[in-house]
Length: 281
Image (cartoon, rainbow, N blue to C red; front, side, top):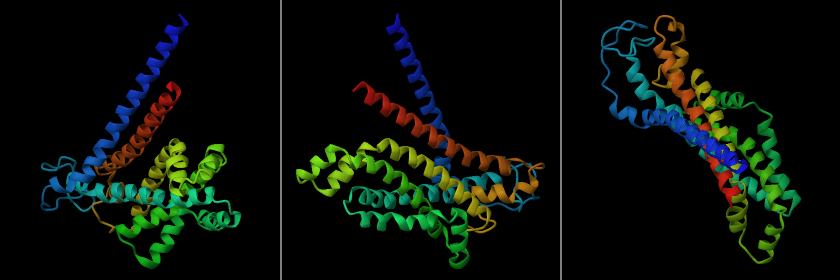
C-alpha cells in the first residue's frame, strides 16, 4: 500500500515536472522566435497614422509616433533577447574559469588577487555602473552586451567560487592531483561537473538579471535610440497612451516577462530531472 502511494507521489511529481517544462518551453519559444525570425517576416513600413489608435490595418494599433505596433514587435525583440543571452553567456565564460582558478589554487595570495577586485564591482550598483560608462562612451548594442556581462561577473564568480571551494577540498580532487591529472580535467572534468546544478540555477538568475538591466538601460536610452524598435523602449515610450491603446505596452511587456519566467521554469524542470536521476542511481 505504501509502495503504491510512493509510486503515485512520484508519478504526481513527474507530472508536475513535465507540466513545468512544457509551460517554460512555451513561454520561452514565442519571444525567441520573434527575436530571431521577426525581422525577416516584418512587413515593410507603411505610412504613419494617428498615435495610439486601433485603426483598420493595424492589428495591434499604433504607437506613440503612429507606427504599426505589430511591426515594431517583430523588429524589437532582437536587441533585448539577444543582448541578454549574449551578456549572460559572456559573464559565465569569464566568471567560471576565474572562480575555478581561485578555488583550486593552493596559493592564498593568488586566490585573493583573483577574487578581491570583484568586491570593487560588487560595491557599485549595476545600473549605476552601466550609466557611468554609457555617459562617457555611448555604447551601442555590442558595448551594452559587454557592460551587462561585466556587472554580472562578480556575483556569478562568487557563487561559483563558493561551490568550487567545497568541492576542491574533497579527497577525490587530492587523489586526481597526486595521480598527475591536468588542471583542466580537475577543474572542468570534475569540479564544474559536480556543481552543474549550481551553475544551471545561477545561469537562470543571471539571465533574469540581464533582461532587467538591458530593459532598464533601454528605458534610459542606453545602447538604443529613443524611438528604436525595441521591446523595452516600446514599454517606456508608449506608457502615456496606455489607456487609449494598451497593446503597445502590454504585448512587449508580456514578451519580456514570459521569457524571464519561462527560462526559470525550464531550469527548474531540468534541475528536478537531474535530481531524480541522481536519486535513482
